[in-house]
Amino acid sequence: MKNLGQMMKQVQEMQEKMQSMQAQMEDLTVEGSSGAGMIMVSLNGKGVVREVKIDPSIVDPKDIGLLEDLIAAAVNDARSKVDDKVAEKMQEVSGGITLPPGFNLPF
Image (tube, rainbow, N blue to C red; front, side, top):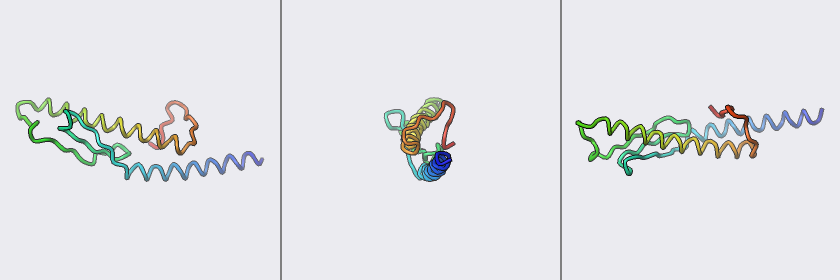
């Protein structure tokens, strides 16, 4: 029975660490870019867009498609960086324990 009590304590500690990590992710800012830095997108650690910066020289009303593609690429770049940071934090919280496939915490 001692082992069960220890295990429950560890689970509770991990839950507390997860809650702390989730709060940290909201404060995290990650930037992604495309077009040699002409498009910059900032996301928080939960993937919410905080800011978009567009170099005015790239804005061509006749080629909106290019601008749209560059914005999408910058968002995807930032999102990839957020995913890397979340995975890094998860390793810290879980103490290196590999979570099962499809077990996507914190969201």
